Image 1 (cartoon, helix red, strand yellow):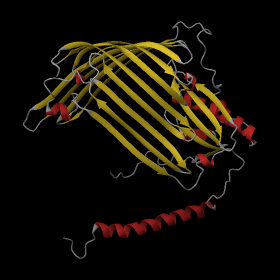
Image 2 (cartoon, rainbow, N blue to C red):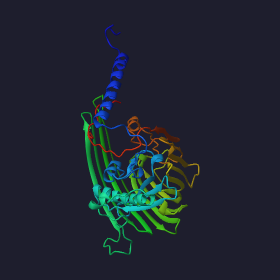
Image 3 (cartoon, rainbow, N blue to C red):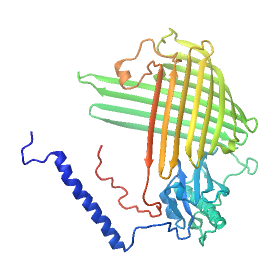
Image 4 (tube, rainbow, N blue to C red):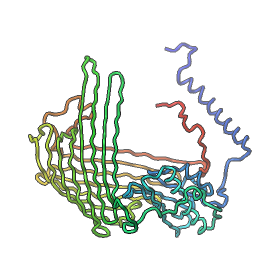
Length: 448
C-alpha cells in the first residue's frame, strides 16, 4: 500500500510526460530560432534531381553515398523521387562482388539505364565504397543530363577512386592467368568463453577452392568443427558435451544452354546432431531458368531437380533398427524472386522423397514480400511451413532432457513453421541529405 504522500508509477509518468513534451517543444523552437530558418516546405530541390536509394545487403552505406554525392537530393519516399535507384549484387568467381545499378525514371517513364561495378576480393571497404559511389555518380550524371537538371562540375569520388565502372573484370581468354581462374581460401578460428559455472570451447577450420567461368562453375569446400561444453549442475556434478563434425562438399555445374544448366553435387561428412557418423552422397542435377541468368539479381524463376544415392552410417541405431543404409532420393525445387520498384518478393517450393518408400517425404513452402502500398506505407510478410516425414536418421535411443534443452540432438517432428508480419508508415520531411555523425557510439539508456 502506498502512503498518501507517495507517487505511484502512473502518477510519476503523468507528471514527467507533460514536462518532457514541453522540453522537446522548447528545444525544437530554439533550434529553429538559432538557425534563423523556417521549416522546409514545398519541393525545394534547387534544380537537383531527387533520388530514392533502394539497396539492401552488401555495402548499402546510405550515409557514405549522401556525403560523397551531395549534388542530388536523397529522398525517403519513392513517390518523391525523380529517379528510382535499385542496387543489387552477386558474388563473382574470384570472391569479389558484381554490383548492378538500375536507374529507373520515376517521373520520366521512358528512362531506364543499367550500370555494373565489379570488385576484387582484395579490395578494402573504402575502395569498394569509392568505386560504387563513382559508378552511382556516372549514372546520376547521365540521368541529370537527359532529364534537364543542372549537372555538377565533377563527381567527387573520381578524384580518389578513379575507377571506370565495369572495367575490372576480364574475359577468360584476355589474360595469361597463372592460376587459371582458381581461387583458394584457408581459414581457422578458436573461441573460448564462459563464466564460473559454464565453459565453452570452439575450434573451426575451413578450406575451399573454386573456379568460375562463363561455362563452368566449380566449388569445393571442407570444414571441421570441434565443440566442447561444460555446465556445472546444482548437485555438484557437471554436464559435459564434446563433439567433432567435419565435411567435404563439391559442386560442378556446366552451362548447357542459355536457360539450361547441368551438374553434380557431392558430400562426405560427419554430423553428430543428425546421428550420422558418416555420410556420402553423389547427386546429379539439372536446372532450368525461365528468365536469362543475367537477370537473376532483379528477377529469377528457376526449377531445380536432382536425384541420387546417399550412404549413411549412424552413431546410434535408428528408429528403423538400422546402423547403416544406402537410399536413393529425389527432389524438385521451384523458386521465384522479384526486385522491382514496387518492392521485393520471393517464393520457394521444395519437395523431396526417398525412392524406396514414397511415404518418406519432405515438403516445404517459404515466401516473403515487402510491398509499398502507397506513399510512405510499406507492408512486409514472411512465412514458411514444412511437412517432415523423412527423418530416417533419428536415434532409436531417443533424446535426453539435456540434449533437448540445449538442442544438441535432432528430435522427431511432423512439421515446423514460422510467420512474421509487419508494416511501416513514414511521414514528415521527404529529404535526408544531411549526415550528422555526432554521438554515433552513444546508445544511451536501453529499455527492454
